[in-house]
Length: 290
Image (cartoon, rainbow, N blue to C red):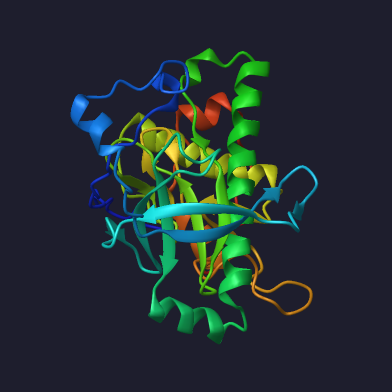
């Protein structure tokens, strides 16, 4: 098929987050001005916050935690970014284990909830599958890095990674996902429909990563919606060869465009030097229609 023209994806602003690596607040006493010292002589007002019950997914054992961790978050009133399904809000926390960084709390749009329910899913099951999908993409990224190190493929250079993500439930029953901020400008390398949005080495690596996930899964699925800041990725989608599972349920999330996305990606993707370094060969079999 003819090769599609690549289009540029719009970059969204990404707020800065504090780095715990260089945060010495736990090692050294906080330096206070005299004004701050006197300020502590008053009963300080409580800031408005949201209590979220955080559920963790254990990828090794393939199971969810039964007992959530309660954490308090100060969530900004306005989102810093809005996608087709969710709004992203900047948040901070004073709860131990969550206080050293800035977070993103993602909430479903009302229109997205309607779409989710049309597929006989709930916000809870969709949020669970979103987190599980993230950890599958994270595992693929780890496998890619392991192969590069094990086989001594130094010419590949830097590789991709995904950070931790959690599912949360607010006290008013709203299901959200919580993940770390990533510094840098947002770039979408590959769309969830398989379209390739960028040029250059990092995009070629993103294509090789997608191809790698297809080969590792023996053609059963592919990681798409490859996006993030530099090599730090987030919000992946997975397109599975079959849209429905054995029980008739939708596989992965509502962004799963299934075989259509797989065919689209491989209709555009031409194996590059990074694919060759990884010795990737598996591609979908061509049909008469192709």
